[in-house]
Image (cartoon, rainbow, N blue to C red; front, side, top):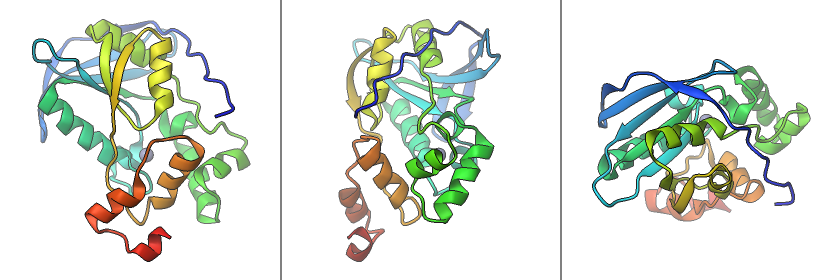
Length: 221
Ligand SMILES: [Zn+2]
């Protein structure tokens, strides 16, 4: 990619009490984090890591439509479910970053971009037409939360190589990445292709679609 990796500002935050969060995936230890300057509140959900293993971590940016409403316009909700299940099994944490809706452009702008996509633009073009950055997310809070949790050496659950790079620059030792690819759907195939082709995400769309038999060969052409 030609654009240089942005530098994330360091973030100061305070953690609240650790509480039990029983979920459909199992029990997590949840903690809220309050950013001093912005007032934004994040959440971590953790499963203790077995002795000698490296925590598996998903840094997940809030996506109201995908995470809460189960939208198929993106793969966020399914990725979050997948991550929670994996972390329940292996130990680690999901760091849920709020205030990063639509890769940081906000909910209203995300829906404005959807409207442009319905008129033919792809995700990147839509943001450009709105005069907004393609990816305005920052990872300073994620790194600070991971350090507070004692997770300074992790395996990152992500298809996005830039995320690992950005966390490394913030002092987190990402010793490896594990793909977080969920099966594509007819509704989000173009979104995922744009992520792969324009944003360097490591996705193997044809294979995952084939395995799950959700798309005909014609749709993949
Ligand atoms: Zn989403």
